[in-house]
Length: 345
Image (tube, rainbow, N blue to C red; front, side):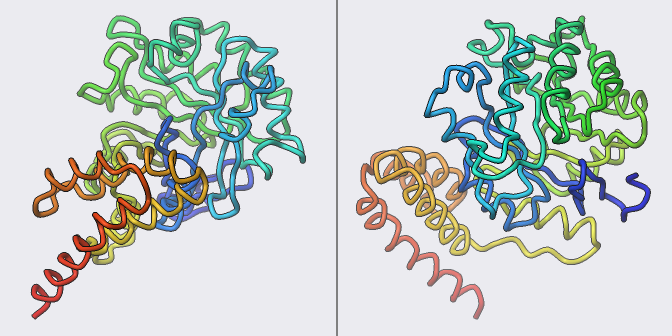
């Protein structure tokens, strides 16, 4: 029961989230290096990029790689998506096995009912399941019966403004024994456009049993945003998505705010050092070419707001090799170091 823990804490199965802080699953962003970095900065819990249950069914090797979890990311849940109960159950069983493609047993199996992207919803998957409560319940039940791990679900406010049925879906999920419900306070039709409907998150929190944690998600970029969501909705925790773009320190900031201690944001020099470390992790995991290609967007996010950042980001997007990235970033790093030294005088 969450009442046994300090403010902000709750549990998912045997995993206690001390501050109730989750890293959202984001395709192409929250891969293993990103998850490890966010854990190091205070994220209590991470979730993999979404995994296609059907791809696992057909033994797709690339999908199995996406499911890999390192020790430094734990506790980490694996998120699956699909629209066929038996295939979703198969994926849950495979990912829960001691020989799981995850390389270690995940903290939970998370069911994606929130992805709004056309290629997902056009197959009846992701947030399209919000339109079919019966099928949503069948999937949750099938996954629950296929694994001994906690089962969680991520949903949206609804399909569109005329069909906000998150309370109905959440109530079904709760009745089937899910261990946590994450609510993104937008409809599918909104995609990621404002506003976030905090009333929907509050309504879910009020509708389901208090022992089932309800986590709010949407537009959390600062500690103040996280505090506001908690205060308005009564949610047990928050899941942070785009707020981590180039800013894994957001978890440090929120923890400091919750614990009532001062928070000092990183300097530009510290941010660029972290960006370069992130790039190194990507290259180590994915090789030179893919590591640089995928690292570009992260470096652009980390360096946003730097002196001359527009031209720096343009150069980053043109770099093709680790050597080119190093040649570009090293002198800039020295410039930032000098600026920090001058500011300290």
